[in-house]
Length: 351
Length: 111
Image 1 (cartoon, each protein chain N blue to C red):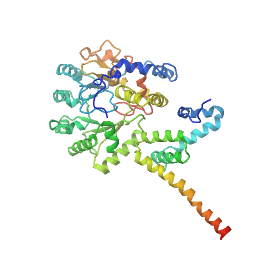
Image 2: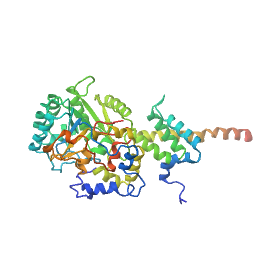
Image 3: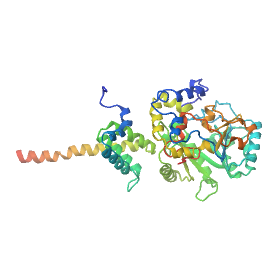
Image 4: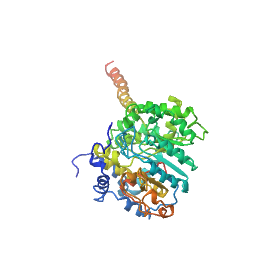
């Protein structure tokens, strides 16, 4: 179990260029596997173009109370990149005027940003249809000052989306750290107690599943059934939907793949499971990702790889929805992670 | 030629068997795919059966494939090991139940 981010460890892989080098060389350079560009060109899907914006995803900082093995953000307590209130003000201007139906706050642990509550209160006033906060659950039990988060979320009608790698303690703690399972269970019970995730409740509580190792997620519907059955029987926990998300080969997951000698096999699995119909609905075509310092990216993964949007509007202060629509999406081999099998996005499967 | 009988990378080439016998190969893969679909048994149950049989058949490709398949379906390592014990119990039972044949023969020849 990691305790420090790659950045803090001064690992080579903390450098996004190094990650892109790995993804462009080796089996993709020597032609053993087709590049993502070649693959989507086969079905006439290159270049990928942004459609109408539906989801505005804002990363309010890389600081987190956990150091998960697979984290694509390389988040952790040692990360200091935090969105300032000034940048939040710029985001709020956009939130008030956007045509997007979903606002999605992520991190790190977004709740650790000192201006998080202020931002949620202000953003909630814009009346966006679906207001998501990606909460890692353990933050709710990490410190007394967070105990009232479920009530806070309820007050602002926030849709809570939380990671839960498995319904057993062993597999959860292996990936996310000792004690994470018990704390997550307690947090889910707290959320249930005020109505989150209950059948028929408008207080949405969804869980995110991503595999604990070098394999792809199984069928989302089957996994949801298994999760629901186990969490209900063992802990009397209810939730609405499970999103099965594929681990993308970047940051700490890439580091893990290389160290465990699984990188090539994993890339083969992704390419073999390539599904052109998942490309149709891949999330970068309807999402925009904003970094902690206000820059714009096609997705959270491109943000971590430091691949900015291909548009004149590169910063939230220059935001222009019409200008951004129709832009060419920036791609590399990590994109195979979103097009394998039934596809993968922050909202689960796409095909 | 490879110096070993088994190469993990060969599993990826399984589909190539159709190249030398298209109809039979394709029919086999169609049948194989159907077998593992959700039916009276769940796909998860079938995966565990496959894992146990992979061990009794001692097929390294199948062991790799169905261990990974189990992980993808959220099967725990405890479930996997129990499934293998089922296979092992049948294997050893199959050996031992032939002991009755031996006993019958001894009784006939030397009774």
